[in-house]
Length: 138
Image 1 (cartoon, one colour):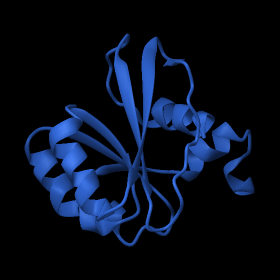
Image 2 (image 1 turned 30 degrees about the vertical axis):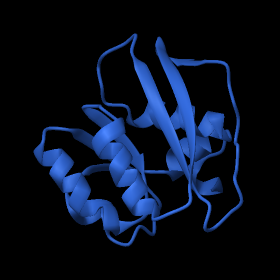
Image 3 (image 1 turned 90 degrees about the vertical axis):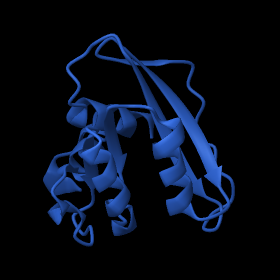
Image 4 (image 1 turned 30 degrees about the horizontal axis):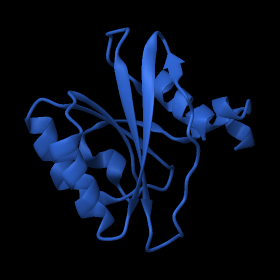
């Protein structure tokens, strides 16, 4: 999982600033799974930027909880969001109107998310790089 996060950042972080702190939030729905802890790394560094990883277990409405975090907690001008749910589109449009730069990282079969006018990239590419595979091997 750490390597996939690193590759998503390497592939899709459009911010030109170095020596920054990148906050990564992993949301886990307790409705679908038990509580999961992926890892607790000491510190990750990519392109002279410090990476902090936060794991959040959500017991309620996942869409609403993530919207709350994007609105109140995650104070950023640049957002890379790995999603596969069109229910986030109205929120993302409001954030885009506020001047936030949003990159969506999606699967091939994304229910139309890529057609919403946001900059996007396929999740396959960072996964392949993390596993040292070609795109044909995924």
